[in-house]
Length: 511
Ligand code: FAD
Ligand code: SF4
Image (cartoon, rainbow, N blue to C red; front, side, top):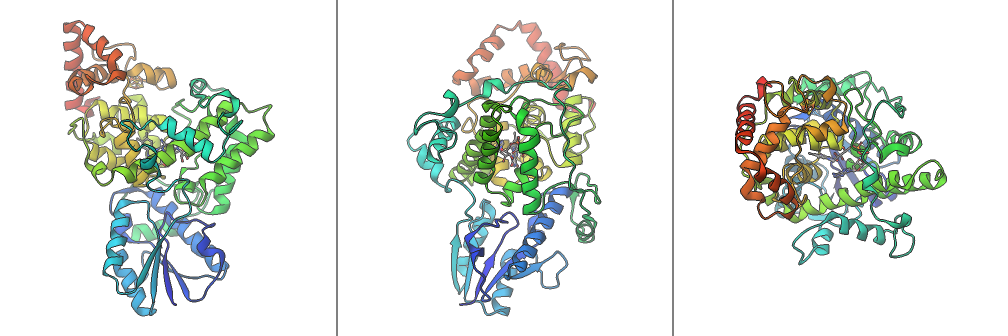
C-alpha cells in the first residue's frame, strides 16, 4: 500500500512511532505554504524558526532513510493550499492511503476532516504522541463541575504521572504549590548567566520569505539567529536551563526588567510547541537535574516550572478542545475598542509598555508576566476587542499557536470567556508593575499619582475598568474586595479617575 503521510510544521516529533521503521512505500510530506504564513501577520522570526525547523526535520528523516517530499515556498508544484497539494501528490504518486497526525489547531482539524470526507482513498488520523492528555481528558475531568480550577487538574496530573510525589497521594516537599515563594523583584542580582546563543545564519530562509512577498512584523538578525530549530539545539536549550537558570527560575518568574529579555525563563516554548521536545522529557530532565543538585536548588524553583508544563500547558490545550469554536468569538465583557497603533512600534511614553512591546518586536519573545500584566493588562483595561488582542498575540510570539495563544489571551488575560480559565480578571494599577519590575523608575509617569498630567495611566484605567464593568463583577466573590473599595471611593475622585481614563482610551497615542 502506498501511503502519503502529512507532517505539519508543528509536528516535528522525532520520537513519533511513525519513524521507527523505514518503508519505501511511505511518502512523508512537509510544506511551507501561504495558507500558513498568511492567516495572520506573523513575526519574521516565527516564520523563519518554523521553516528552519521543518527543513532540519526533513533532513533528519532523510538521513534515516525515509522518503520525504519537501515543498519550500518557491517549489514549482507548491499550490500553497493543503488540500490542493495533497490531491496533486495522491494523483502523481498513485497513493492508496492518506495518513495525518491530529492537528492541534481547530482550523487545520476542520480542513483535514473535510479533505478526508471528500477523498476517494483510505484515510487515517494518528495521535501526535506529544501531549500528556488527550483532547477530551480535561472535559472528562471536570464533568459536572461549574468551575475548572487548574490546581485540581494539576494535582491529578502529578499523581497520574507520578511526578514529584512522596507517596501515591502526597506531594514531595509537603505541599502541591510553592507559588508564594515565587514573587521576587530582580535588582541586578543574582547575575543572569547569558546563553551563548546559536548565532545561526538564516539569510537564505529570510530571502525566500522576502522574495515571496510575505507580510511579517518585527525584526531579525539574519546572521545571528538564536532560536532552537533542531532537536540538538532544543536539547541544548534545555540543558542550559537546567545548569544555569533553574536555580532561580521560581524566584524571578514574575520579575521584569527593561534590559533583561529572558531573565531566568527557559525559552523552551517554541521547541515544545513545534514538538521537537516532549513535555515529559523536559519535566523529567529538570527533576533529574534538581535531584542531583538538591543542595543548591530549592524545590520551589522546580515545582513552579513543572506546574507550567504539566499543569497549565495541558490544561490550556484541554480547554481549547472543550470550548472551540465558540471560544474564538467569546467576548463576555463586551469590549470593542481598537488595539493602539503603538503595539506595532513600541512608541509610547509608558515605559513598561514601551519595553515589553519593543522587546517582543525585536525578539519575538516576552515572558508570561509581561504578556499578562503589561500588554494584556493594558489591552483589557482599555477594553480592547479581544479579536484584535488575539490577532496581535497570535502573530508576534515565537511560540504562538492558536491552542495555547487563544486560551491564554482571550481566557486568562482578557477574561473574555467570563471566567473559565481565570477566576477573576488579571488587571492591576501601576503598583503591581512597580512591585515586580524596574520600569517605573525611568518612566515619564509617576506610579504613585492617580490623576494629573504625569499620573501613571494604569492607575486611572484600573478604577475606570472596575467602574465601567461593575455589573459583570457584582456576583464574582473574588472581586468583592476590589468592588467594595470602588464603592467607597469619593465620587469626585472617581469622576476624575474616569475622566482621565476616558482621555487615555480615546487618544492612546498621546500617552
Ligand atoms: P517559561 O517561563 O520558562 O515556562 C516554561 C514552559 O511552561 C513554557 O515554555 C511553556 O511551555 C509552559 N507555560 C508557561 N506558562 C504557560 C501558560 N500560561 N500556558 C501554557 N503553557 C505555559 N505560551 C505559548 O506557548 N504560546 C502562546 O501563544 C502563548 N501566548 C500567551 C499569551 C498571553 C496573553 C499570556 C499571558 C501567556 C501566553 N503564553 C503562551 C504562556 C507563556 O507566556 C509562555 O508559554 C512563556 O512565556 C514562554 O516562554 P518560556 O518558554 O521562556 O517559558
Ligand atoms: Fe508603566 Fe505606570 Fe510604571 Fe510608567 S509608571 S512604567 S506607565 S506602570
